[in-house]
Amino acid sequence: MGMTMTQKILAAHAGLDEVKAGQLIEVNLDLVLGNDITAPVAIKEFSKIGTAGVFDKKKVALVPDHFTPNKDIKSAEQCKVLRAFAVEKEIENYFEVGQMGIEHGLIPEKGLVVAGDVVIGADSHTCTYGALGAFSTGIGSTDMAAGMATGKAWFKVPGALKFVLKGKPSGWVSGKDVILHIIGMIGVDGALYKSMEFTGDGVANLSMDDRFSMANMAIEAGGKNGIFPVDDQTVAYMNAHSEKPFKVYEADEDAAYEAVYEIDLSQLSPTVAFPHLPENTRPIEDVGEVKIDQVVIGSCTNGRIEDLRVAAKLLKGKQVAKNVRVIIFPVTQKVYLQALREGLIETFIEAGAVVSTPTCGPCLGGHMGILAKGERAVATTNRNFVGRMGHPESEVYLASPAVAAASAITGRITNPEEIQ
Amino acid sequence: MKAAGKVFKYGSNVDTDVIIPARYLNTSDPSELAKHCMEDIDASFAEVVKQGDIIVADKNFGCGSSREHAPLAIKSAGVSCVIAKTFARIFYRNAINIGLPIMECEPAVDGIEAGDQIEVDFSTGVISNRTKGETYQAEPFPAFIQKIIAAEGLVGYTRKHME
Ligand code: SF4
Image 1 (spheres, chains in turn cyan, purple):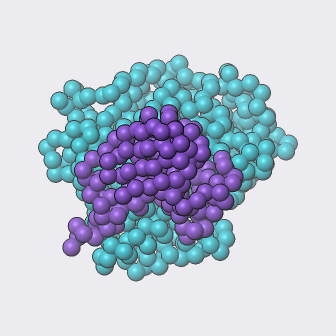
Image 2 (image 1 turned 60 degrees about the vertical axis):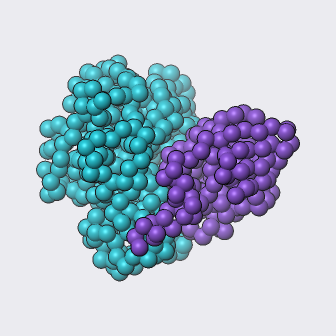
Image 3 (image 1 turned 90 degrees about the vertical axis):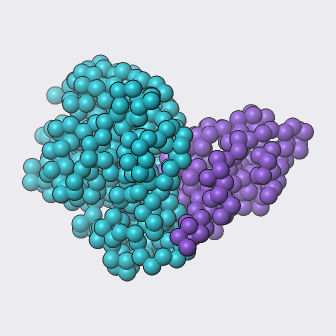
């Protein structure tokens, strides 16, 4: 029996010729990641393990991105723990405010992950790097602590679902719509404990930014990881961002999949997930009249340059609807600067949006745009759970940057086709 | 090892944002976290939960974020065990890693109601419902995971392995 792409990467990192779904293995790690919420807990656990240093100073990354720039004294104390640990253990990849961005935008941009790597991160959206053909997955703080100490982690080898993508997305349809469609189809636990392997001719019609936003949301279907094959676009991205050698793994022809789904990208519409689960999706035609109070464009799902370009294209020369707040947060400093140079930031400000420094901020109801009771937001983020962006009686609708920008103009959830 | 207590019952997809909302994540102090455990779906939980009580939930418990603060909050609130049909995978790892007992058992979840008094025997996987006089058999953990549990979590296990 052949192996899936994920299984091949895991086997190689476990020093095994072959692995099977369900097998428990220990793998060598290429990168261990943590942020200002999860790393302080990991650092406490790390000290209990009793090793002097981390397994490899180049292979640990610490990114204070959630409550930064520090939103209050407690957050400042947490970041201080991170910074002190980074100094003491001589962690090379600590990114201070000013250099940092939202971790899942920053790590690929800094070239810290390439195809064939195994990455764990104490953040559930670590699965984002599957876009580059790496195995990467979220774990908790204690796993992070053990990973920093030993350079290893244990895994149950996952089975897999295969998504064969065909055709080309039309109009305003983006990777975000594809992944929302998939989550709507299989449910929030549809890929529980499994890999989501994306393949097919359609992959070539998805940009790297599309793929990042799709792999990012594998966790929203319960997946262990989401992974894309490596093609010319992936190689070009890696060459532009990294000097690390990469390795390309391909699924065997006879690899076993628990289910195979075919998706014709040309048939998809912009898709919106209604509260309070990412699986509550509807194509834009079926959304109806949903008035909104806030629009959030950004996050590790959709804060990349293409996302901002799409939003700017719609907002150019338009005004944000009265009584609607629009908050745009680019994923990294680099993206922010590029957006500035391309004139996108000017477009946003002229339209009446605010632009924030990179931070997780409103995405997790941290700061910079919390919702009041009864308020509704359209967000390009990845979760719309109860209370995710603020008051437990507020609502989050997940959508693409195009839908979010179109909605900003009208004040209700809007098909970008409607905007002239 | 056994646990016994009163049941708090919830539905499917209880996510980490309701287990411990992000607005309280500017600290990792377990007793602080416990004060806000389950707040957004069960406002009185933290006040009424007693040492030893048990959470029973449907599918995909703990979905969402990787925050270990979620199992920490539950453990620190006094909960002795969480029983669900399935757990989200990061929550599953985190619970094992920090030593919060969890069990997957579909018949138990179907049979147990809120307020029932139940007893859980971790060595046999037998869950007894004292209120209804029923018993249910949970899936045993794989041997490797049992080793982590025996070492009282991943830190203990790792320490032992590094020596
Ligand atoms: S942007 Fe949102 S989903 Fe992404 S890492 Fe930050 S809090 Fe998590």
